[in-house]
Image (cartoon, rainbow, N blue to C red; front, side, top):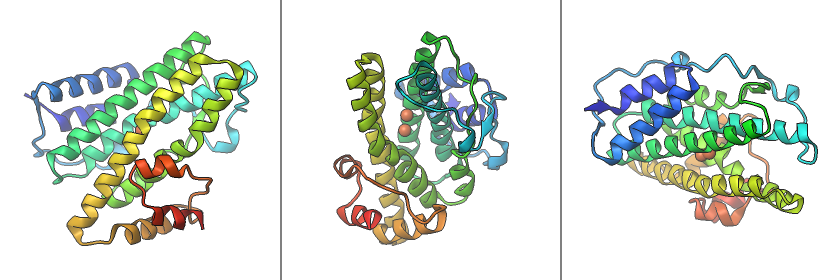
Length: 264
Ligand SMILES: [Fe+2]
Ligand SMILES: [Fe+2]
């Protein structure tokens, strides 16, 4: 029987993209056929061991190419940026299940499903880039995404607050308007791709909320107060900026009180 944490180590500590996609899918298949062990007897290696490919070159956001959806270069830059978000999301899903042990089996099963969905998102966007004669890695990408993981490597609640309940939740706020723009441009392929991703992402944020509240209950924390505390501590700049997609965030497990606090 193969072990989930062996797969996690391979996916986090090796840079090869195609191997990572294949292993992620294989692990998910094994889990579904009850042939994946969740036994946790291997040590957790530090987050500095996580390895990314040499390309794309990672640069500060100000060095990112323009992403105007109405020009061919802007469109390519936009989808390259999305590919990078999805690629890092594969790592983020593997890392949360790898680094934080002692939670119920469902925690590991849930985040493995997320890893597989992120791998699918990445593969879809990469194929779309390839149809525009470019590959993932050909442009520089945003260096900041992984920082949320390294900042929260020792705190599962901070990880859940910052990654699904902040970064991924941001996707719920901004993606619907981008889908509308593509609709107006008559770009049905982009509409279909982003709609598929948005649907799955609601589920990822929802899992983030579920496990955030679960771990809060385990420790006797009041979850709304804990969320505010962790965002204040870990979000550089104090608080994420709106506008927030209230409707989708409520579906994804945010409370009205949390949304009021974010908005004010
Ligand atoms: Fe995704
Ligand atoms: Fe996601």
